[in-house]
Length: 551
Image 1 (cartoon, rainbow, N blue to C red):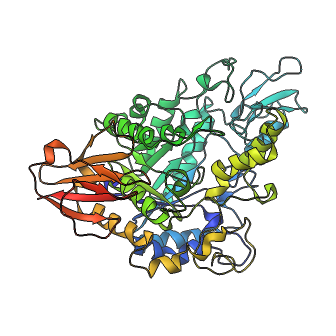
Image 2 (spheres, one colour):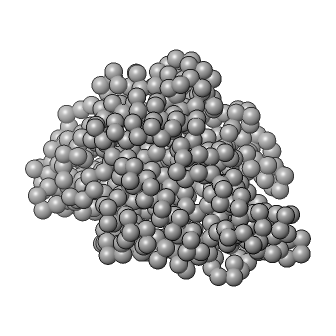
Image 3 (tube, one colour):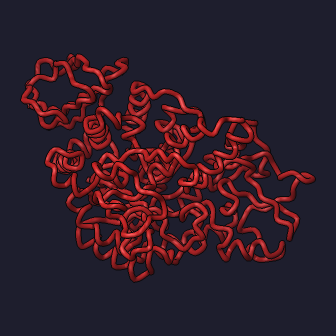
């Protein structure tokens, strides 16, 4: 078995995980204190969102020193202690690297901005404007133009994200050498793998032509999966990732399975897997224009990727992360069937083919926070979107707040709910962002002492996945693709076959076993309901999932 087949990865958003020094902000010492909790859960990898020195314009995804630790999180000694603690507990560590852009306060950009003759001028993307207008019509992922004017040199710099996040010019070989040096630095610190932020955006089309106008993200055809993206990533792969057996996952926007294979195929020496976003669009049009969620659409997309990546490919499995709303509120039912729907989603996540990623609090069933006051939001994207929808689309405050309650990134960034204390056991003081009020019933202390909790269901699923090779290396086959409220799939090796059957709705549904299994004896291994039923053919209760083994 390979590293990627055995890995079960737990993502931590450091700012919101555990505050050990009492300043209302999560830190590395707090994470270190909670490693036993992760060990108990059963995960064997930890992925940290950025912890580098940063002005925090985008909560750490704007880096001003790639080799420094943000002071609010600790220092290098604290980080080294975390690495040692993880390794001592059999947990490997993955770092989040942002190599498409830096902070505008990074010394590289400060030099680049100082004058057109500066040696680092070409480390970023600078262009003359068209009169008083930007060089082209590209727009930012955070809304508005992707260019900012610099009066000092009468030129514009490119930023596909916030204006404080200027894009690096990867066509410059010195930039590529600097990126390689950063990766090597952390590799030498004992880091076992890397998540590469928006890595498929690093190569832009020569000439930077204007793009076809869109409601949002004009210009993507000129920088998504750009002309040199593969050789640039392959350099990192051949020099470090593959040579030193580092586990890698690339965040890749707007990719198809065919695109993904070009990044992850074993013979290409680039990445192990990628995060795609196709299934994150099942309930929206361009994110902020929300439409009703339909389970069948999610099933078809997941099946599409499972099938396409079965030949010389590998999936990164996730339902939520620091950039997405809580899956309990998005794909489940966080009111009447919170417990059952979250457990069902957990089975779908952990038992498919690929490497599963669990986001902090997902194993508790943490939900969207639904702030009522705009002042409670901290996310730069959410605040920008509010202004755009208010001014340009003339939407009411009430309507925009409804969108934020459903889709804002802050839904995933509220403090980890350890206890039912005032600040959820995250901190002894007011946190940097408010705690979700439901911490009284959704918290670690309560979940770990309840044998039937969501947490303990996750533990059972993780143990099952780690015990049975079929869930790590077996093939995937789905059934009943036409069913609007069912999800049925099998995992198979020559020696083992498991069948997963789920009712993806809040109503009882008759579930029919696939014809190829009707002559087999099936043993019920795990379910989110308590019963002694032996047959997969039955009326399944709301959000019921059953896992059967063929004997």
